[in-house]
Every structure is written in C-alpha cells, then in structure tokens.
Length: 453
Image 1 (spheres, rainbow, N blue to C red):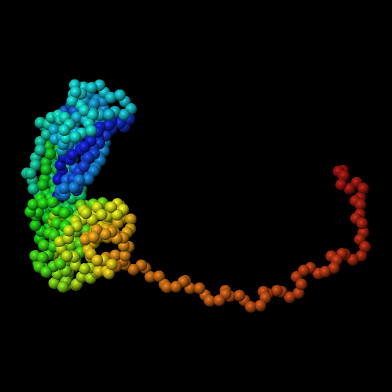
Image 2 (cartoon, rainbow, N blue to C red; image 1 turned 90 degrees about the vertical axis):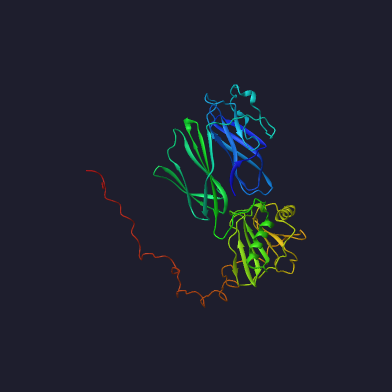
C-alpha cells in the first residue's frame, strides 16, 4: 500500500535566507514505519503563504521511527503580495493549519502585519493554536477513477494540456511503488505512462494549479496492482514477519497438507542495507512437501505469487517447528543489544544442518561482512563467517598449485675463460720513433721577406 496523507510533526520551523532569497521549511517528529518521501507542498492562498506536510504512508505496523525533513522554496521576501513574517503549515496534528513565524537571516524581519497577533514561534504540539485557512477555490476529486492493472504492465493517466496562465499540472506517486516511463503530449492531452514496482494498492495524484486564477484542483486515482492467481487483501490486519510467513505456509498447505517449513529468505525492496525487519518486504518461503520442495514468493507486502513445486529434496537445513515464539522485531533488538547496530543486506530464518546449531536462527547478513545468528529459543548471538545452510560460494578462478616454475641449477655460464686475442695488446717497448741522422737547424727567412712592396 502507498497513500499520500498528511503526516504529523512535533516541531515546525521557517527560516528565510535573504542572500539566496530562499524560504527553508523544516519539520521533525515520528512517522509510522513504511512512510516515505515526507515533504512540504505549497498550496494556493490569496495574500498568504500556505504549505502542507505530506508523505506516502504504507502498511501500518504499529511502529514509528523518527524523521527530519528540510525543504527550500525560492520566494522573494518581503513583498507586498503576501505577509512576510509567517507561513501557514497544515499537518496531521493541525488539519486547519498553524501559523509559523519566519526567522530572517542577515536582515531585520519585516514589520508585523494585522495577522501578527495569531503568530506563534512554533515548536508545535497537537494542542497548539490553529487558524482556519481553508480555501474555497480548492477542489478535491477523489475516488471517481479506479485503475486495475496487472503487475509489471504499463498503464496511462491523461489530463488536458490546456494549462491556465502561469498555472501548471503536476503528478505525484509513491516512487517505491510506481515508476514513470514516459510523459508526452498526445493530441490535446498530457499523457503519463507508468509501470508498477510491486503489487497492492496505491494512488496517483494529479494537481492542476490555476496560477493567476488562484484555483487548485486535485484528482486522485486509486490504483490496484495485481497478478493472476492472487487474491486482494481481505482486511487491514497488521502484518508482522511471522504472520506473513504463516499466511505463506497456509497457502502451501492448501495444495500440500503435509508441508513443513524449511526456511525463509527475506530481502528489502531495493538494494542496500536496512536497519529494521519492517523494511524486509520480499519473502521467499520454502517448505518440504511430498518428499520435494514447495516454495512461494511475495510480490508485495500482503500479496503472494503461485506455489511452485520441485521434486528435488531439500538439503542443508533442518525443518523448523512452526509456529515459533520469537518474532523478527525481537531478534533485531537482540542483534543490536549484541553490538551489531549497523545495517544488514538480508534476514533469513533457518536451522542449519550442523552439529553446533541446536535450534532455528534468525540470520542477519551484515553490510560490513559478518553473518550473525540469533537463536529463536535461546536468544543466543553467534557470529559465523561460514554458514553451512547457505548456498556454496562459487570457486575462485583456477590457480596452479605450488610456486611458479623456476629452472633447476644455476643460470648457464660458458666453460673456460673469455676469449683473449693472442700477443700483447700494448705498444712495443723501447724509445719512440726518432728519425735517423743529424737534423739541420731551421733556415732563417730571406731579408725583407714578408714586407709589403
């Protein structure tokens, strides 16, 4: 499930950067688990600044997690068109809106307007004062369009391309549930082509803002993504890890009554580490059935694919007596109490066929390397780099055994002494060459030789 809703905030703030001309809105508090994309959205309000705090809310688990959001809006302040000393923010605690004073940086704040008596510096609680900022020009169209679409099949949403002056048309959806494949203009319509990432129920929201006309139309499309052979959820019961596994086992037993749970492999919807079992959305449940193997895999939080059967028997794990008492949330708490507070890539439930493994275990594959076992019955924490229940690691590339080849003996040396030419190589002994006989002294040049005449 993924539905766009107002979300609560314990603290709201508004800061204006006068140098960048940017309004920065902030909020923090606690959100239901599986709430994604918390953000502020500006709403039309003649003569004022109004925003709402919203997020995509998934299946309710009864658990909450802290959050913080900060978002920038390029708005020139102060100006004559809107009051510049506060904004109105609508959240789950204040559905009619609450004024939040703007803190200006690097500039004296503007003079208080006539609304200043309503302004409070807000670190909010649900008991804070509210103001009615409802807009008569805001139109909500909800529940009129239901879209049923097969899993991984694309579908389209259309809206007239005639946008009012200075207006715009926006589309919103849960990015963990739906992805945008294409957007184009066809004839006189804007056409968005979307595809699903998981099964279940969600929404696509199209907003038309009038610009100068100051109207705001919101159209909500209810989307149900399904696959053949699956059934829609029957109720809104909170689904935990063990309750989801129980549903899967019962579906296998509809076809194989003697089925016994062998193992469960759990991974998150997207790659990367997670820090809570509630983020483990994809489950593969494996049972021993009729001397073979029956498996079923989730296609969403509360949706399952068909049962698959393989005549090959299971190896590597003992069957797990079902049900078990320890849920994954408690195993995660024990993991963190044992000093392993980092994220993990996957979480499985197995009983490895090994002499030192005396009970079923929740097995966490940590991002930083080790595999950590938490005993289902004892709560004992074991760190084991070699997990016998996991598939074998592929062999490393071939390396020849032994040390690289070295030729035996010393390098080749020619026999004997190096070649030397026969006879002496030095000049002959004795005095150097002297001409024979006496030598006449040099003659004097004739008189007057060399003079100019």
